[in-house]
Length: 378
Length: 236
Image (cartoon, rainbow over all chains, first blue to last red; front, side, top):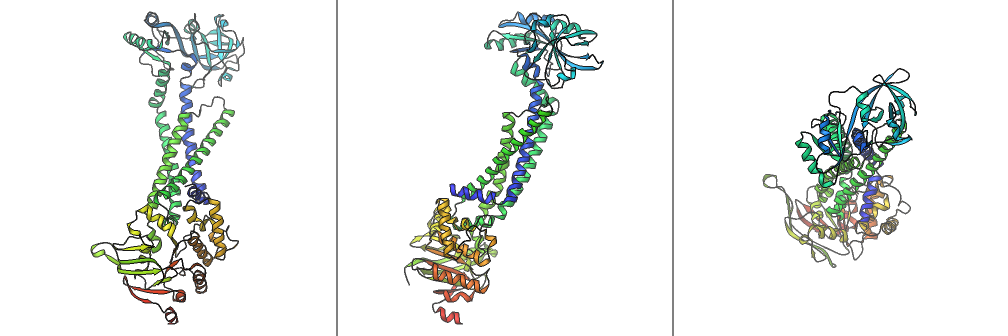
C-alpha cells in the first residue's frame, strides 16, 4: 500500500493548481472556524473572570442571576443562614458591582469594583506591589494591572481618585488570572467600603462565597440553600452558567454558530468542488488503473489518502495562520480576547474531517462507478 | 497451433433488455496460442472491443467461458480477477491513458507499484523498459512533452514491465500517423512477441496486418472468418 499511497500523493501534489486551490480552501475554512471559535472561547473565558479570580468553591446567589455581572442583592440573613448550614466550613459575603471613577484630570472612567469580606479578604488578588493589609487603610483600593489598567491613567501606589464623591487611594497593584470581558479596570476593596462608597439598593450582598467541609457536602448545601429560596452552585457550574448565558441569551452563540457554519460551507464548497474536479479529470486514468488490476478498495484508499492529506495539511496551515494572527493581535492589543483552546481546535478538526469525508465520498462514488470497459469503449 | 494461451467458447454478450437489447457477441469461440499475434478486425460495432474486454477479464459475458492458461477467469471473484489482470495481462489502450502528473518512468512503473514492489526498484525497472522501447533519457519527462508515438511507446513499456503472458492492444495505431503506427506495431512484433507471450490486437488499420499471425474477422457479434494467410490479405 506504501507505493500506492506514494502514487496517490504524487498525483495530488503534482497537480499544483488544484492542490493549491484545495489547500487554500481548507486553510481558509480552518482559519475562520478556529478563529471564530477562539474568539468566542476568549469571550467566555473573560465573562467568568471574577469567578475564576475569586476562586471560591461554591457561590450562593439569587436564583434569577443569569451571569456574574448581573448580580441581585441578597439580604444579610442569607449569609447568616448559609453560615449555619450543615457541611459549610465557612461563608463570606462578596460585593460585585460597577461604579464611575473621577480621575485626577477630571475625566470619568467606569470600573468594576469587587468588595472582599472585611475579616478574611477571601478571594484577594495576588499583589505585585503594596501590602494586602493596606486595603484596610483609609479609602484603600487595590487596582488590577491588566490590559485595562491604563484607562485609570496607570495609577501608582498613592495615586488618588474620586468615587461617588469619596476619596480613593491606590494601596496595592495586583495581577489576576483573567481580565474582565467589558474592558473595564477592576478595583478591589473591602466589602464594607464598597457598599459604603457605591450607591446600592436595599440588599447589598452580591454573592455568598462558601467553602464546603468536603466535596460530599456540596449536594447537601445546595439543598439547604434551595430551601432558603436561593441558589448554590459550584465554581465550574457558575462558569458554565455564565457561558450558557452568553451562548444562548445574548445571541453570541447563534452568531458564532452561523459564522462557523458559513466557514464550513465555504471550505466544503471550495475543496469539495476542486477535489471532485480533480477526480473527474483523472477518472479515465483511475478506470485504466482498474483495468490494469487495481482493486476497488485500493482506489478508495488512494482517494481517502489524498483527501485526508489535503485536509490535515490545510488544518495545520489554518491553525498556524490563526495562531499567528492571534499572536500578532495580542502584541498590539493586550486585552485581545481570542484564545485558541483544545475544544476550538477539536471543533475545527472535526469539521475539516467532515469536509474531507464528503469530498472523498463524492470522488469515491465516481471512481467506483467507472467500469474498465468504459476505458476500452472510449 | 502452439500451446494455448486463451480459449474462449460460446461467448454471448448483450447490453440492455427488451427492445433496448443490443447483442454484442453471438456465440463466439476463439483460441489463441503463445507466440501468436492475433488481430481482431471488423467494422465499428461488430463487437471487437467487447470481445477484447471479455477475454481480458474486464467485462463478464452473459454466457460462455474464457480460459486463460487453463484458468476459467470468469469463475474468479473480483479481487482474484484484478490480481489475474495485474499479473497475466498487459494493456495498451487506444488513448494511452497516461497520468499527465507523473513522469514517464512513473507511468511505466505503475503495474510494478500495483504489485507492491519497492518504488525505486519499480522506477529502475520501468526505466529499463523505456530504454527498450526507444525512450532512453526520457524517463523524467512528463508524458505531455512526448509525441503521440512516444506516448504509445510509454504505454507499451507500462504493459510490458510486469512481464505479462498476454498483451492486449486496443486500436494501438488509432491516434498515430501511418508511419509511426506501423513502426510501433513492428516494434511490438519484433521485440515484445515471443514464444511465451500471446498478443491480441483490435484494429481497423490494414497497414499493420502484415505483422499478424492470424486475423479474425468480426461482424455483427460473430467471428465470420479467420485469415491465416495474412500476407495475402495484407496484399489485398
